[in-house]
Length: 330
Image: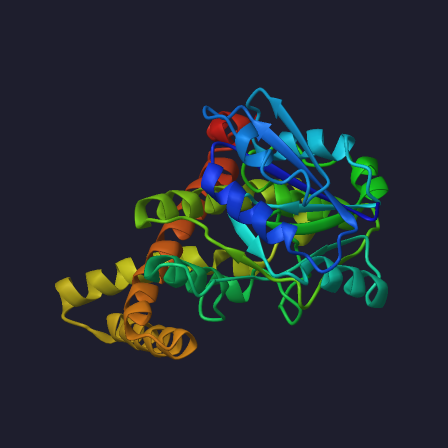
Protein backbone atom coordinates (compact mmCIF):
# COMPACT_ATOMS: atom_id res chain seq x y z
CA UNK A 1 0.00 0.00 0.00
CA UNK A 2 1.60 3.25 -1.18
CA UNK A 3 -0.88 5.87 0.09
CA UNK A 4 -2.92 6.12 3.30
CA UNK A 5 -5.52 8.90 3.23
CA UNK A 6 -6.40 10.05 6.74
CA UNK A 7 -9.54 12.06 7.45
CA UNK A 8 -10.28 13.42 10.92
CA UNK A 9 -13.95 14.33 11.12
CA UNK A 10 -16.49 15.71 13.55
CA UNK A 11 -20.17 15.35 12.61
CA UNK A 12 -19.93 16.31 8.92
CA UNK A 13 -21.94 13.41 7.54
CA UNK A 14 -22.89 14.93 4.18
CA UNK A 15 -19.37 16.19 3.52
CA UNK A 16 -17.98 12.75 4.38
CA UNK A 17 -20.23 11.14 1.78
CA UNK A 18 -19.11 13.61 -0.89
CA UNK A 19 -15.42 13.05 -0.09
CA UNK A 20 -15.69 9.25 -0.05
CA UNK A 21 -17.71 9.32 -3.24
CA UNK A 22 -14.98 11.31 -4.99
CA UNK A 23 -12.31 8.94 -3.68
CA UNK A 24 -14.28 5.91 -4.90
CA UNK A 25 -13.90 7.11 -8.50
CA UNK A 26 -10.10 7.33 -8.50
CA UNK A 27 -8.30 6.08 -11.61
CA UNK A 28 -5.57 4.62 -9.36
CA UNK A 29 -6.88 2.41 -6.54
CA UNK A 30 -3.56 1.88 -4.73
CA UNK A 31 -4.57 3.60 -1.50
CA UNK A 32 -6.45 3.06 1.74
CA UNK A 33 -8.76 5.46 3.57
CA UNK A 34 -8.71 5.86 7.35
CA UNK A 35 -11.65 7.73 8.86
CA UNK A 36 -11.09 8.95 12.42
CA UNK A 37 -14.38 10.01 14.01
CA UNK A 38 -13.37 12.61 16.59
CA UNK A 39 -16.26 12.02 18.98
CA UNK A 40 -19.08 12.97 16.60
CA UNK A 41 -22.56 13.44 18.04
CA UNK A 42 -24.13 11.74 15.02
CA UNK A 43 -23.47 8.23 13.72
CA UNK A 44 -21.06 8.23 10.76
CA UNK A 45 -20.80 4.46 10.48
CA UNK A 46 -23.75 4.13 8.03
CA UNK A 47 -22.05 6.58 5.65
CA UNK A 48 -18.77 4.64 5.78
CA UNK A 49 -20.69 1.39 5.23
CA UNK A 50 -21.81 2.61 1.82
CA UNK A 51 -18.26 2.25 0.41
CA UNK A 52 -16.61 -1.05 1.53
CA UNK A 53 -16.76 -2.55 -1.97
CA UNK A 54 -15.42 0.60 -3.60
CA UNK A 55 -12.68 1.58 -1.13
CA UNK A 56 -10.18 -0.03 1.19
CA UNK A 57 -11.44 1.75 4.26
CA UNK A 58 -11.02 1.67 8.03
CA UNK A 59 -13.27 3.50 10.46
CA UNK A 60 -12.30 4.41 14.03
CA UNK A 61 -14.37 6.31 16.59
CA UNK A 62 -12.64 7.92 19.57
CA UNK A 63 -13.20 10.61 22.16
CA UNK A 64 -12.97 14.21 21.02
CA UNK A 65 -9.42 15.57 21.10
CA UNK A 66 -9.36 17.87 18.05
CA UNK A 67 -8.13 17.30 14.49
CA UNK A 68 -4.36 17.19 15.08
CA UNK A 69 -4.35 14.38 17.64
CA UNK A 70 -7.03 12.54 15.68
CA UNK A 71 -4.77 12.60 12.61
CA UNK A 72 -1.94 11.23 14.75
CA UNK A 73 -4.29 8.45 15.84
CA UNK A 74 -5.00 7.56 12.22
CA UNK A 75 -1.33 7.79 11.23
CA UNK A 76 -0.34 5.14 13.78
CA UNK A 77 -2.82 2.75 12.16
CA UNK A 78 -1.90 3.49 8.56
CA UNK A 79 -0.24 0.90 6.34
CA UNK A 80 0.95 3.23 3.59
CA UNK A 81 4.39 4.62 2.95
CA UNK A 82 2.83 8.08 2.56
CA UNK A 83 0.26 9.69 4.87
CA UNK A 84 -2.10 12.03 3.04
CA UNK A 85 -4.29 14.25 5.21
CA UNK A 86 -7.52 15.60 3.75
CA UNK A 87 -10.15 17.71 5.49
CA UNK A 88 -13.62 16.23 5.59
CA UNK A 89 -15.04 19.17 3.60
CA UNK A 90 -13.01 18.63 0.42
CA UNK A 91 -13.70 16.85 -2.87
CA UNK A 92 -10.95 15.46 -5.11
CA UNK A 93 -10.73 14.92 -8.85
CA UNK A 94 -10.74 11.34 -10.15
CA UNK A 95 -7.03 11.53 -11.02
CA UNK A 96 -5.96 12.86 -7.60
CA UNK A 97 -4.03 9.72 -6.58
CA UNK A 98 -2.57 9.28 -10.04
CA UNK A 99 -1.33 12.89 -10.10
CA UNK A 100 -0.03 12.60 -6.55
CA UNK A 101 2.08 9.52 -7.33
CA UNK A 102 3.44 11.18 -10.46
CA UNK A 103 4.50 14.23 -8.46
CA UNK A 104 6.17 12.08 -5.80
CA UNK A 105 8.24 10.40 -8.50
CA UNK A 106 9.14 13.60 -10.36
CA UNK A 107 9.66 15.97 -7.39
CA UNK A 108 11.13 14.12 -4.40
CA UNK A 109 10.33 15.66 -1.02
CA UNK A 110 9.60 14.53 2.53
CA UNK A 111 6.26 16.32 2.64
CA UNK A 112 4.03 18.08 0.14
CA UNK A 113 0.87 20.05 -0.24
CA UNK A 114 -1.48 21.10 -2.99
CA UNK A 115 -3.82 23.92 -3.86
CA UNK A 116 -7.42 24.41 -2.88
CA UNK A 117 -10.06 25.84 -5.16
CA UNK A 118 -13.80 26.36 -5.52
CA UNK A 119 -15.93 23.77 -7.27
CA UNK A 120 -18.45 25.00 -9.84
CA UNK A 121 -21.21 23.57 -7.62
CA UNK A 122 -20.28 25.72 -4.62
CA UNK A 123 -22.59 28.59 -3.72
CA UNK A 124 -21.62 32.21 -4.41
CA UNK A 125 -20.37 32.91 -0.88
CA UNK A 126 -18.24 29.76 -0.81
CA UNK A 127 -16.62 30.83 -4.06
CA UNK A 128 -16.03 34.32 -2.68
CA UNK A 129 -14.43 32.94 0.49
CA UNK A 130 -12.28 30.64 -1.62
CA UNK A 131 -11.13 33.67 -3.60
CA UNK A 132 -10.21 35.64 -0.47
CA UNK A 133 -8.18 32.69 0.87
CA UNK A 134 -6.20 32.09 -2.33
CA UNK A 135 -5.89 35.41 -4.14
CA UNK A 136 -2.63 37.24 -4.80
CA UNK A 137 -4.36 40.39 -3.47
CA UNK A 138 -4.93 38.88 0.00
CA UNK A 139 -2.94 36.74 2.40
CA UNK A 140 -3.45 33.94 -0.12
CA UNK A 141 -0.53 35.46 -1.99
CA UNK A 142 1.84 34.91 0.95
CA UNK A 143 0.49 31.66 2.42
CA UNK A 144 2.70 29.54 0.19
CA UNK A 145 2.51 28.01 -3.25
CA UNK A 146 4.93 27.01 -5.99
CA UNK A 147 5.99 30.60 -6.70
CA UNK A 148 5.38 32.00 -3.22
CA UNK A 149 7.49 34.58 -1.46
CA UNK A 150 8.17 32.09 1.35
CA UNK A 151 8.91 28.37 1.63
CA UNK A 152 5.82 26.31 1.01
CA UNK A 153 3.93 25.26 4.13
CA UNK A 154 1.56 22.36 3.37
CA UNK A 155 -1.86 22.70 4.98
CA UNK A 156 -3.73 19.80 6.50
CA UNK A 157 -6.72 20.11 4.17
CA UNK A 158 -4.43 18.67 1.43
CA UNK A 159 -1.10 17.50 2.84
CA UNK A 160 1.16 14.48 2.48
CA UNK A 161 4.09 13.31 4.63
CA UNK A 162 6.28 10.22 4.54
CA UNK A 163 5.07 8.04 7.40
CA UNK A 164 8.55 7.42 8.81
CA UNK A 165 9.28 11.17 8.76
CA UNK A 166 5.94 12.02 10.35
CA UNK A 167 6.57 9.60 13.22
CA UNK A 168 10.16 10.78 13.58
CA UNK A 169 9.15 14.41 14.29
CA UNK A 170 6.23 13.38 16.51
CA UNK A 171 3.36 14.19 14.17
CA UNK A 172 0.99 17.06 14.86
CA UNK A 173 1.59 19.00 18.08
CA UNK A 174 -0.73 19.96 20.92
CA UNK A 175 -1.83 23.08 19.03
CA UNK A 176 -5.50 23.02 18.12
CA UNK A 177 -5.17 25.85 15.58
CA UNK A 178 -2.09 26.25 13.38
CA UNK A 179 -0.95 22.67 13.86
CA UNK A 180 -0.21 22.21 10.15
CA UNK A 181 2.29 25.08 9.64
CA UNK A 182 3.75 24.03 12.99
CA UNK A 183 4.40 20.57 11.51
CA UNK A 184 5.91 22.07 8.35
CA UNK A 185 8.39 24.11 10.37
CA UNK A 186 9.27 21.14 12.56
CA UNK A 187 10.10 19.27 9.37
CA UNK A 188 12.38 22.09 8.19
CA UNK A 189 14.11 22.27 11.57
CA UNK A 190 14.88 18.57 11.34
CA UNK A 191 16.34 18.89 7.85
CA UNK A 192 13.36 17.61 5.89
CA UNK A 193 11.98 19.18 2.73
CA UNK A 194 8.51 20.29 1.62
CA UNK A 195 7.18 20.90 -1.87
CA UNK A 196 4.14 22.25 -3.68
CA UNK A 197 2.68 19.68 -6.09
CA UNK A 198 0.80 20.73 -9.19
CA UNK A 199 -2.29 18.86 -10.31
CA UNK A 200 -3.47 17.67 -6.89
CA UNK A 201 -5.74 20.58 -5.99
CA UNK A 202 -8.86 19.86 -3.98
CA UNK A 203 -12.24 21.57 -3.91
CA UNK A 204 -12.43 23.02 -0.40
CA UNK A 205 -15.80 24.15 0.94
CA UNK A 206 -14.38 26.08 3.91
CA UNK A 207 -16.95 28.01 5.96
CA UNK A 208 -20.45 28.57 4.66
CA UNK A 209 -21.27 31.91 6.30
CA UNK A 210 -19.44 35.15 7.06
CA UNK A 211 -19.65 34.81 10.86
CA UNK A 212 -18.01 31.38 10.92
CA UNK A 213 -15.42 32.50 8.39
CA UNK A 214 -14.54 35.56 10.48
CA UNK A 215 -14.09 33.43 13.60
CA UNK A 216 -11.93 30.94 11.73
CA UNK A 217 -9.52 33.48 10.26
CA UNK A 218 -9.35 35.31 13.60
CA UNK A 219 -8.10 32.06 15.12
CA UNK A 220 -5.55 31.74 12.31
CA UNK A 221 -4.33 35.23 13.14
CA UNK A 222 -3.99 34.39 16.83
CA UNK A 223 -2.01 31.26 15.97
CA UNK A 224 0.67 32.99 13.90
CA UNK A 225 2.52 34.85 16.73
CA UNK A 226 2.43 31.60 18.71
CA UNK A 227 4.06 29.88 15.75
CA UNK A 228 6.59 32.72 15.46
CA UNK A 229 7.52 32.17 19.10
CA UNK A 230 7.90 28.41 18.59
CA UNK A 231 9.82 28.77 15.32
CA UNK A 232 11.60 32.18 15.35
CA UNK A 233 13.79 31.35 12.33
CA UNK A 234 10.71 31.37 10.10
CA UNK A 235 9.16 34.65 11.17
CA UNK A 236 8.34 36.88 8.18
CA UNK A 237 7.55 40.59 8.03
CA UNK A 238 4.70 39.77 5.63
CA UNK A 239 2.78 38.18 8.51
CA UNK A 240 2.07 41.74 9.68
CA UNK A 241 0.27 42.67 6.47
CA UNK A 242 -3.35 42.07 7.66
CA UNK A 243 -2.73 43.94 10.95
CA UNK A 244 -1.21 46.88 9.07
CA UNK A 245 -4.21 46.75 6.74
CA UNK A 246 -6.59 46.95 9.72
CA UNK A 247 -4.72 49.74 11.52
CA UNK A 248 -4.32 51.68 8.26
CA UNK A 249 -8.07 51.56 7.67
CA UNK A 250 -8.76 52.90 11.16
CA UNK A 251 -6.23 55.70 10.58
CA UNK A 252 -7.94 56.46 7.28
CA UNK A 253 -11.31 56.80 9.02
CA UNK A 254 -9.81 59.15 11.62
CA UNK A 255 -8.17 61.31 8.96
CA UNK A 256 -11.39 61.52 6.99
CA UNK A 257 -13.85 62.29 9.80
CA UNK A 258 -11.62 64.57 11.89
CA UNK A 259 -9.39 66.20 9.29
CA UNK A 260 -11.42 65.84 6.10
CA UNK A 261 -8.50 64.07 4.42
CA UNK A 262 -9.76 61.26 2.13
CA UNK A 263 -6.35 60.13 0.82
CA UNK A 264 -5.92 56.97 2.93
CA UNK A 265 -9.50 55.81 2.43
CA UNK A 266 -9.06 56.54 -1.26
CA UNK A 267 -6.20 54.03 -1.34
CA UNK A 268 -8.52 51.45 0.21
CA UNK A 269 -11.13 52.35 -2.36
CA UNK A 270 -8.62 51.62 -5.12
CA UNK A 271 -7.75 48.31 -3.47
CA UNK A 272 -11.46 47.45 -3.24
CA UNK A 273 -11.92 48.19 -6.93
CA UNK A 274 -8.94 45.97 -7.88
CA UNK A 275 -10.25 43.07 -5.76
CA UNK A 276 -13.75 43.46 -7.21
CA UNK A 277 -12.54 43.51 -10.82
CA UNK A 278 -10.09 40.64 -10.34
CA UNK A 279 -12.58 38.43 -8.45
CA UNK A 280 -15.26 39.13 -11.07
CA UNK A 281 -12.84 38.27 -13.88
CA UNK A 282 -11.56 35.09 -12.20
CA UNK A 283 -15.05 33.80 -11.40
CA UNK A 284 -16.84 35.30 -14.44
CA UNK A 285 -19.56 36.50 -12.08
CA UNK A 286 -20.18 40.04 -10.82
CA UNK A 287 -22.05 38.82 -7.72
CA UNK A 288 -19.04 36.77 -6.67
CA UNK A 289 -16.93 39.86 -7.29
CA UNK A 290 -19.00 41.84 -4.81
CA UNK A 291 -19.04 39.06 -2.21
CA UNK A 292 -15.29 38.62 -2.64
CA UNK A 293 -14.77 42.20 -1.54
CA UNK A 294 -16.78 41.47 1.61
CA UNK A 295 -14.92 38.19 2.24
CA UNK A 296 -11.56 39.88 1.68
CA UNK A 297 -12.22 42.64 4.20
CA UNK A 298 -13.57 40.12 6.74
CA UNK A 299 -10.48 37.99 6.25
CA UNK A 300 -8.00 40.87 6.53
CA UNK A 301 -9.69 42.56 9.49
CA UNK A 302 -10.34 39.35 11.46
CA UNK A 303 -6.90 37.84 10.84
CA UNK A 304 -5.23 41.21 11.45
CA UNK A 305 -7.05 41.72 14.76
CA UNK A 306 -6.22 38.17 15.89
CA UNK A 307 -2.57 38.59 14.99
CA UNK A 308 -2.29 41.97 16.74
CA UNK A 309 -4.04 40.75 19.89
CA UNK A 310 -1.85 37.66 20.06
CA UNK A 311 1.37 39.58 19.40
CA UNK A 312 0.61 42.10 22.14
CA UNK A 313 -0.25 39.44 24.73
CA UNK A 314 2.81 37.33 23.96
CA UNK A 315 5.42 40.03 23.33
CA UNK A 316 4.32 43.10 25.30
CA UNK A 317 2.43 41.57 28.23
CA UNK A 318 4.70 38.49 28.23
CA UNK A 319 1.88 35.99 28.66
CA UNK A 320 2.40 32.31 27.99
CA UNK A 321 0.50 31.11 24.89
CA UNK A 322 -1.48 28.55 26.89
CA UNK A 323 -2.53 31.20 29.41
CA UNK A 324 -3.37 33.80 26.79
CA UNK A 325 -5.28 31.46 24.45
CA UNK A 326 -6.11 28.18 26.22
CA UNK A 327 -8.61 27.15 23.53
CA UNK A 328 -5.76 26.99 20.99
CA UNK A 329 -4.28 23.99 22.76
CA UNK A 330 -5.43 20.50 23.70
